[in-house]
Image (tube, rainbow, N blue to C red; front, side, top):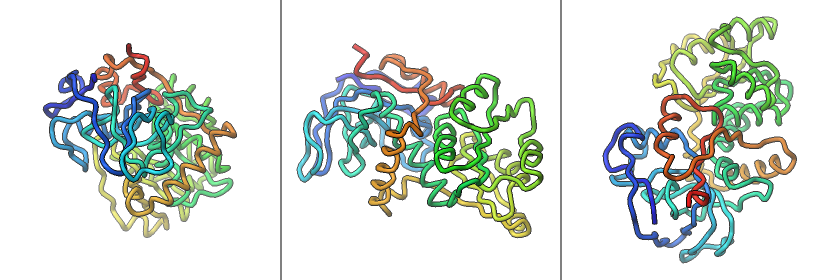
Amino acid sequence: MKAWQVQELGEPRDVLRMVDLSIPEPAAGQVVVRVLAAAANFPDVLMSRGLYQNRPPLPFTPGVELCGVVVTVGAGVEGLATGDRVLGLSVLPSGGFAEFAVMDSDVTFHAPAGLDDAEAASLLMAYQTGWFGLHRRASIGLDDVLLVHAAAGGVGSAAVQLGKAAGALVIGVVGSAEKVVHASRLGADLVINRSERDFVDVVNAETGGRGADVIYDPIGGDVYHRSTKCIAFEGRLVTVGFAGGQIQTAALNHPLVKNYSIVGLHWGLYLTRDPAGVADCQRALEDLVRTGAILPLISKRLALDELPNGLQQLAEGATIGRIVCEVSNSG
């Protein structure tokens, strides 16, 4: 089979190599799938650089999130059969940027019929992160004001849709006029182009000085620090990543005197600490798909041989929504 491998660490377009490998075999509790589509995620970038918290040994095939058709079922697997179209997480080193991949059955779900392959490949990580961040960690409520940074990106676009589904008033922050259009189409009630307006001033003005009840921050750095200037009394600032490249530090006297909470969210921990909660979340997401409340924003559909440049665009923050490699259409 054809597969992209990281054989040395560095930028994706520099270190990814196309190789021919044997089709993998599943261990107990695993399935092997023919990959239909694999979504690009920032952890794929960080793993290529050697900067992710989980560092697979070299060489490995990235592509942590995918949709595929089950071709082989390992021992002890229940509820999955050959021919099922599924979505979920890969088991590295056999990631999704290949013609076949390995998946753990515990984190493999039947793909909703209402989504095409690229959309199904994009349903798990960003939406599960958003759902746990907003509902479990921030207890978002009806009529809360939700501020979403990078609202037209993969993680932010999911949070915008989930916030609207929860009944919140959603304010999105983006970095260009083009992204304003996309965030508005996702359902954001107000979209701020940060290159033209200071989001702190706009949020405080739009809320009469009250600020945002929930702030969803996948960027970190100065965005986090600026967000503390427009958070409401008893607000919740949810930190979900550091895509801006700078891990911020917090002066804890500030949340004390303003009475807000800083809430961390590492969704991957729920896979081992609360797998039943992950399954419950996926059922909730499927319900939202059926009602039309959520739909992954796919901006680029790439063939397998186009993957390195697409992943590099994600690394450089030059993407809208999700980039997906459609492996089944790659010849």
